[in-house]
Picture 1: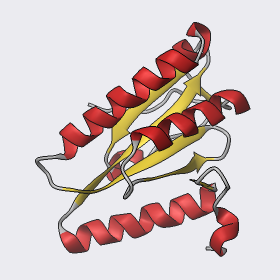
Picture 2 (picture 1 turned 90 degrees about the horizontal axis):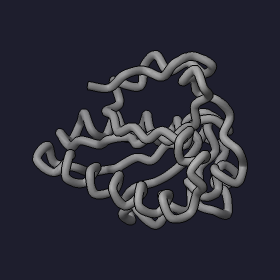
Picture 3 (picture 1 turned 135 degrees about the vertical axis):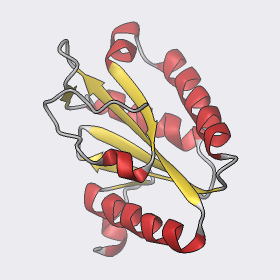
Picture 4 (picture 1 turned 60 degrees about the horizontal axis):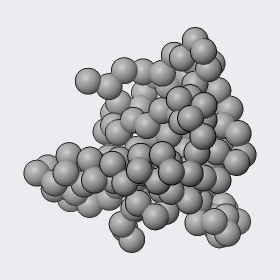
Length: 146
């Protein structure tokens, strides 16, 4: 990781730094028996394929995430200009769904008030575990999470 150059003034990690932190979180989780979840936010086109996020929408999403997350969580580009990710850290198995549900609800409320209907219609929010991230491909329909 290249250090602080990978961290923007808005508190959002660049893709390389975010992926590095995600891998570190995965290793920490395995060693500590603590869980974490990932929230992915992205835009889709009329065919439900992941597309580049408009810069205004991206700023709004990142701002909304920063207001929805706990101090131990962090935000970054899972895939530059396409998928914003947030990592919900240090969760017990019992609290995983509760924390993710609270963050997802808060995020949805903020985005509801700050984005237009067309922007919200294209925006997708998914909560997943690390192993569920495999197979995300840009320009294709996103993976399904059960």
